[in-house]
Amino acid sequence: MIRFFRNNAKLIVVAAVAILLGLSAPAVGHGVHAKFAHNADKVDGKHAVGAGAGVAKRRGKLVATNKSGYLPNNIIKRAPDAARLGGFTHAQMSSMPLLVQGAGVSGTATVGSGGVNLSAGSTGEMRFGFIVPPDHTEGTELHADIVYREHSSGACSWHISTSGLVGPNEHLGDMVSHNGAWAFPGHTGWQGTIPVPAGGSNTFKATFTWPHTDAPGKYVQFAVQRNGGNAADTCGAIQVMGVQIRY
Image (tube, rainbow, N blue to C red):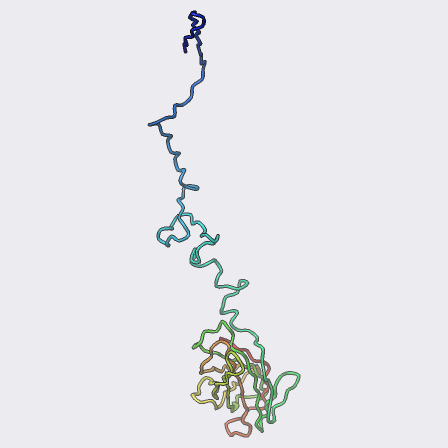
């Protein structure tokens, strides 16, 4: 760069020489653009979409959280093991002890150390109630499995009647209920005989089915009565050892 100065009519020439050795800089100005880095718009090679993107648009892409910091509810179709609780399937967990209410006996039925005893020669009844579990699907069947013992040496049968009551749903003021009864295999009504086969074992199971409305929260009663003295009843004393509600 050369500049001229005038001082006292003298011309002073000042010459400045800038020497750049081994140094260069890129030119930045109008018409000059930086090249976009390859894959700069991706994370690990994947594009991203917003939280509101539909399933088809977000397939194979990263999904951002919404303005509240959450992912969409349907971000996964089903989590691994979602159908299990503690590793157990629903079928394994849908048979469980339930809190019984109003349990008792009447007639000649008695409670002993091994369970409820139903006499062979007279009439006695056992009953209890329970609340339909919240995970029960209305319209599907409820079952009551009764495990009982009978000590006759040969094949026999015992004559029973069943009854039930579906009661208050969500509060005590809802007393819309009806008398009902538990059915058992081979009978369309709610009374009849249960065959007891001969054999080495004296422990058996009888399954009863609740055929009425059984929405979660409903109160259901189970009652079974031994009709002692019935000609079809050839068994000895029946001892009910336990009951399981299955759904």
